[in-house]
Length: 511
Image (cartoon, rainbow, N blue to C red; front, side, top):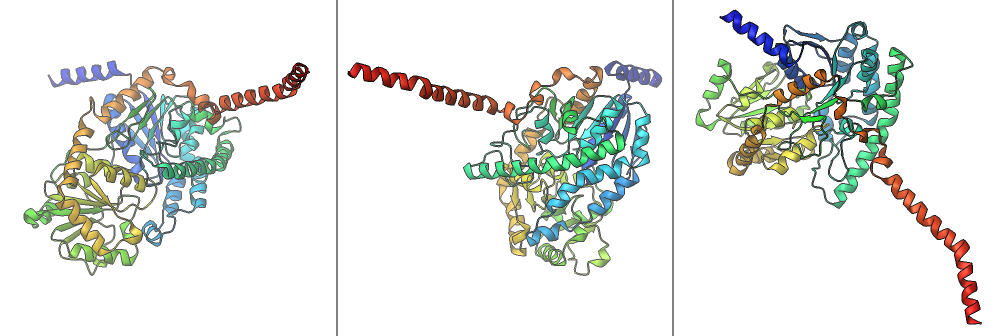
């Protein structure tokens, strides 16, 4: 009987989509970029597909059918590049990353990846589909060209719309805030001006960066590789890590599907040591504090660490704190605090005794807090944190604090407010309902469209011709300029030829 069930399951898998060899690539500099790829891979492997996953972080688990490739050059570059003091820079009011750091990352990581033998060995294999990270995909587009197969994006940064715009999706400056700014889609005049300037500056900065990426791609893969812009326009499908209830309502082309919270899961029981610690709090409950994978709490300035420990000591709750250093190094740790290098975040967020979540505002953390219906205090650090926090604050389930002006008193008040003011938990629960009320799960959606692209050899019929229009053509500026030129020409001709005749006729009539 069991054998029959297995055979039936195998036939069902085969009927959905024949087994495919899929290459996934992310060059994101933080481990959070891996998570949506992991989840999609774990959904595709049981359906018979073979996944090869190139990234810069050594594997945490093994799964039959999933092979992780972590080129040493890529791993080493990311390790050196991300040895940063993000919290200290933010508290000083400095840019977390200099313009030079932003400029150099795409082409330097491209060089480090393509000069590695493990990467180049992939060109000797056959793949049916490539799935790239929508953040920094340009280098990997060279591999797409050499392998000659269709490709998709997973846009891991939910508020980043650059790859969507290149594919022809409308992303007007008036309603699409820069992903690194604390703005929403509802901007006043001055905010729209500011947003336009920032986005135009970013798009200008991208040009020399992409020229350097292009140089690296052709240096390693051959001078015949087309421009990365041209290659990027040919994307078959985009899995956007967003959803109207947690990001923004957007006009999406047929080759875009939203998959926010593809990684979200119901909470399960916590390990005994954590459960015992929480139980000691009684019905008062506990607070969870985490700065995610991109911001290392252990690297924070000493005055911020003292500020946090002083805050925790004043709270009538127990505190679980994700802190990567040894407890022995924290001689002033309050008795109500327990730290861990790694903590099961979603199981914690789904615990009935959790009262609030204090976080940096990373995208996946914000999705998880909505999925589990928890009020939040955010302290944005860099990249999309400000945009994520702005959206959450507007939606009413989060309270945002600035690290530049943070004090113990402000943090204590903020934590008490999101706990005792019922509107924060009420809005978190309302967003939770909206997020979960979908026809299919994000993973089911992602699997369907991945297999759809494979079934239809790239599904190029979903592409919009808008992707081939430049800025002037897309927004009809060339037409406006044409009409202005026609009017000006007609006016000039009228003055040159008709005006003298009209004057002459007038004079003759007068005489």
